[in-house]
Image 1 (cartoon, rainbow, N blue to C red):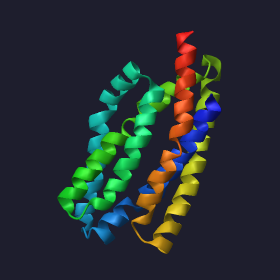
Image 2: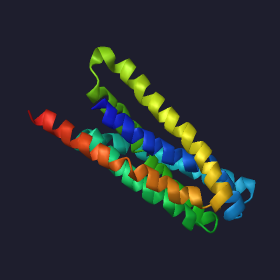
Image 3: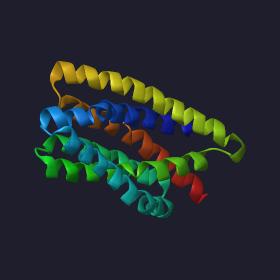
Image 4: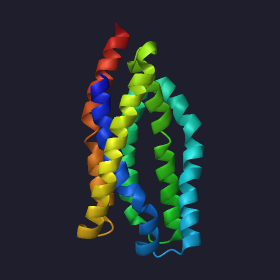
Length: 185
């Protein structure tokens, strides 16, 4: 089951890293914000993260970490694409807050699911594996995001990144059904 999880996180990380290095550039070059405004927009991301991290942990406990991650992948795709719709400071702040709120679904659910899938004596190894796969996806996504930005324009990473994270949904749904089946036995 850890392999389905790793596969899903690889594509999610790939998509996420296609856009994150370019968030501030997009705000500056496409939306036309000055650097002080870009800082405010990036701060809205952190406010969204802080506002959602504890509530999403509660939801993850109640619904299941695997279900929360499926939702996170789907809502991430929506929030990443939505960033291209910002045309002014207020729009960018609102969309980045939403981006952070959706992003806050990830950590509580990911850490819980890693703990659920690994035995206690193998938890550190499982965490290392998951973070390695996540890092490889991030490395490749950052490179590809720059390639798409240069070749197809500044909005292109925000179109392709969501598609990459949606590739994560089928393996997470398969994992969710396996986890649910195992817990019902």
